[in-house]
Length: 419
Image 1 (cartoon, rainbow, N blue to C red):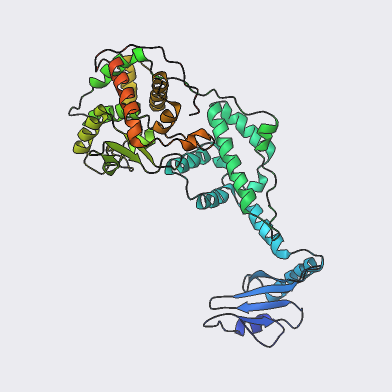
Image 2: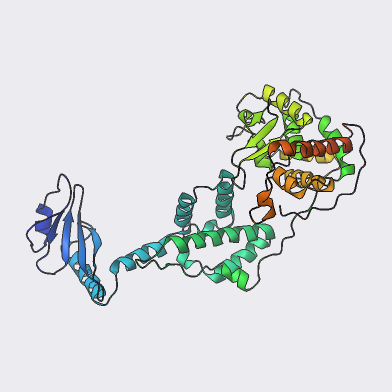
């Protein structure tokens, strides 16, 4: 970086200085030591440079562009920064803290998304929905102005309509503040956001207690449920009913989450090896499932009928089925069995446990992590070892449904496994 002879920086002299073709050139002010002008290819900017009291290093702090600041205004600002340096204060920290504290919730959330590269699209969608639905009035507010009282009041306000969404929205906000505490620091590495206002809810025990949903489709309900599904047929009004039916049945017979099942691609199904693969499941560990006889036929049918890359195609922007709410309502009406798509996963797990399938096999089938289980670390449950348990679960469900010869129906207890 080149330097020129010191001059008194005045407006006429600074205006006369030409921009450089490459690099930067420094002009030091003769009136105030440490004050200068930096000239580059596109702009001229004022700065101040000095040593922090008690430290060996010198720091350089940008004041602003010429045109925004006059030389006299920039010189006056430089004097303030030099006083700070002589007091042992780094002006850069003050500017950095000011900029961080002025960041709005929406800006911090954008930084949050940029840093969290492994977030799934569904999670990002949920976070944006929470921000836009429940705390949209805070989007343009600096996060430093979001107080504990505001959090407490907003939690109660949302809770009047949905206690679960109130908790979810505040947990999201807590994550954003935790991110800010780790992201925005001063030159010493100390956080600029030491206090998370959402902690108020824990300190006052204000979180709503939400009981985990434990509903499953009971064995005696499977017959009318399957009957309602099998009565569904395509017609001139809708050509996707049979595909939706197979999607719902596939969720029950695999234990997959709705998003995992809905986004299955044809390349994920190995008809020769009789397996399906989830490359990026919720726990980010590849999940390979063996296919029972019934599932193999189902996937053959759907792959042949699908017009795009997905096994269960859809008309939306994703290209695959998402959540067929009207279809579910119709099956509930026709069968008298109320259910959600996640109830199908719970039903799969509960039936697996009732059939005395080893717990490690059940966990492998539903892709639950077992890192904290020392014994599980020595159990290698490859896909072929899971084939018999998978077939056993399918056979039991189909027998209860009347699709196969009758089975002994047992009363299922709600599974205690962590979902």
